[in-house]
Length: 91
Image 1 (cartoon, rainbow, N blue to C red):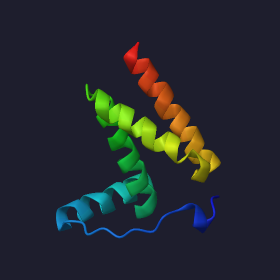
Image 2 (cartoon, rainbow, N blue to C red):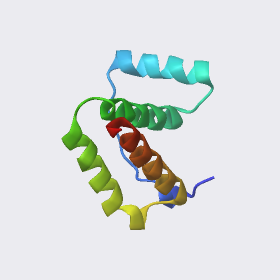
Image 3 (cartoon, rainbow, N blue to C red):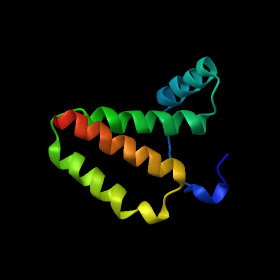
């Protein structure tokens, strides 16, 4: 399990309908809200990369590479997966 210092604290305000859907999602999938939000945000980023938005893909790679020194091992794996995914899309 990752240490607490491997994460960034943030706070968001969810609309009531979104919160209700997220709560149902968590109960069905037996995950915490934190885990669900992380998974859904990551999935959303991957879906966005699947579009024809080349500049966004390039920007995401630059952001990831610029921050590699601060990443945990899991985050480095995620970055490698993203780069591999993008490379596959370009073929």
